[in-house]
Amino acid sequence: MIAFDNQYHAKVSRGLRRPKTQPMSGAFNSKGVAVVAVVVLLHTRASGQQVGDLQQQLQELKQQYEQTTKDLQQRIANLEQQIENQNEAAAQPKESTKTSDEATVSAAELAAENAVRKVLFGNSDKVGAQYQGQIPTTPTYDLLQEAETKIAGLQQQLGAFEFHGYFRSGYGLNSQGGEQVAFQAPGAGAKYRLGNEAETYGEFIFVNNWVNPDHDSDKAWFHTEVMLEANTTNSASYSNFNNGIGNDQFRLREVFVRAGNVFESQPDAKFWAGERYYRRQHIEINDFYPLDMSGYGAGFEDLTLGAGKLAVAYLAGARPDIQTANGNLAKSNIDVRFYDVKAPGGTLAGWFDFATGKGGTTPAGEVISTSNGYAFGIRHQRLEWHGGYHALGIQYGTGPASNFSTSIDDPTRFINSTARFLLTEQVLFQPNDKFAIMPIFILQRTKDGNPQHGWDQWASFGARPEVFFTKHISIAFEGGFDHTQSSSGQYDGWLRKFTIAPQIGAGRQFFSRPVLRAFLTYANWSDGLRGFVGGIPFQNRTNGLTYGVQAETWW
Image (cartoon, rainbow, N blue to C red; front, side, top):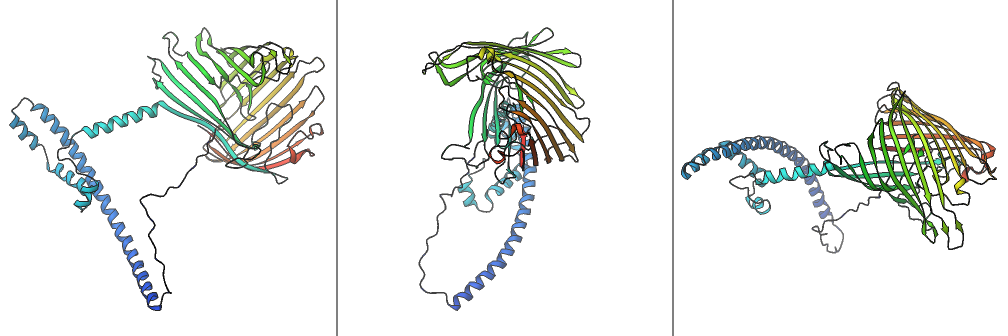
């Protein structure tokens, strides 16, 4: 989820001019000093009197404002009665109408008008008339109608526009005295997050509902969504380093149009086109995405079909850094999902993806093979379970579909033989408003297609318990264990990470945000991962410590 650096500049009014000064010849004599002392003393006494006068004037202005408000309310009521009388007397002679109109002007109306004049003009007719103008003698409803029109337009625009987002930001140090580093095992698809994020990251989503913003059931609706993403290395609030390392990064992650209720027979069906996050699956405490088909394309979703709902999409991506005679290397995906199928203990969802990419010859003469592959998965979830939820997913893929995303891996002549198996389980358990815990488990096996290599493996399990002392004070713990093994023998070992984080948050729920936290993180790892964890500060070590502060929120 992008952050923008808002630049604020103080401006000096052009109407102000610095007073001209004349050079002084000679020093102050004693007589001058005495005069200055008297002036200062008088100014101090006058200042005290001015404070009292200002307080009195403020109280009088408040009373005058309250009385003026009452008078204006009475005047509006009288004007409404006057209009009603005018309508009733429209058929009467003109002279009779004039007499009736004048009769409706009450003393309260005149008092209100005088009060308004007094508020605007004070006691100076010259200043008031010059700068404020004159109040009409015969009030009309033109200004009121114009104001109501403007308010209605603003309310309509406000109802049509939505702003959502996410960000996390903070700063930490490592036990060696340098900037905070993250502890992640090589070959692991993610790391345990709490107290282990060494960057600022943001996503800012702008939604505008162009047609039927309330999504009324009797007509179609259309909206656009734009997401800006940014991340920084927490190096500087304005990162502009000469070599570009550590500079802020900005991306446009979503730009798409969505329409719904287009067909009366399928009011829940939605159609879309553009670039978007597409129906991603996410594990919170280690920020892992088992399935992320985000990309460019079009499709429909939430089409009611028998026992469940159907979504079909065309999604694609490309590699501008890899070119053949056909142009940039591209991959196309047909993504099909059937979900919300009732099952024992929750709901079931199935997923299938077919991926293909046309090969060619690069300018350097390298031949890239045309690739085809498929992937499928099944997911069981229960969204209401002991104050939380649980979700179990199993996925398998081959060839260009084996990475479960629209991204393109580096092409090799073994691309069609690649494969991946993934098993994930996540649970959120919150029996009351004093305690919550999220345990997770991941098992992933991948194969690069080379017949000389076996399967790489990543196994991970961990949990984040939280204890809530009050509505806003809590403490979070997080422990995680990762074991990774490379079939080529490059690494084989385990990583353990533990964090404690006192928090100030918005509520007593696991997902209550915003939250401010301080953290202390300790990690250690086996000799088989020495040199792969913790970066330069811990390159020759098998343990490390970091500490810092962080804020996190979404809306």
